[in-house]
Amino acid sequence: MSPIAPRLTRPSKIPVKPLAGAGPALAARKAELVAEQTALKAELDTPQTAEITRNVPLSVDDETKNQAHQFLLNAHHEGSEPTGAELGRFLGRSDSLGRRLKRELWPEITNGNGQLKKETI
Image (cartoon, rainbow, N blue to C red; front, side, top):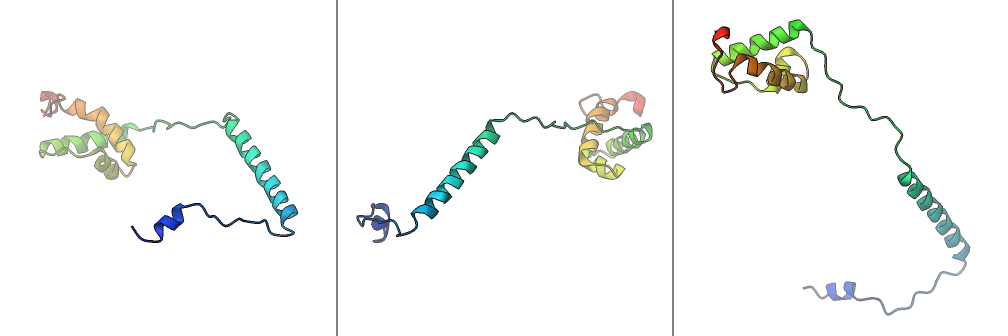
């Protein structure tokens, strides 16, 4: 432990006197801070009335679904399983849409165990 550390942890024994003439200015600043603190507490206690927007389901047209299905089918024939993000990038859409489409279409392509369904061969 350094020799400075004990001095920093001990309370100072030197009495601190307020600056002459600073009383009214300090009192005014304190009043401002108390008013600001009260306003912030009131703002926190006020229930939020703003409408929270949820993730709106993305609409997908039939052509996009068909492209996604074909992409997943081709990938499965090649022996790979692309990620939903890769599917989204292939479609030129968002990663989240690609993940959603993969969750929706992958079970249609496979039996849920990675095996290709007979009707898709």
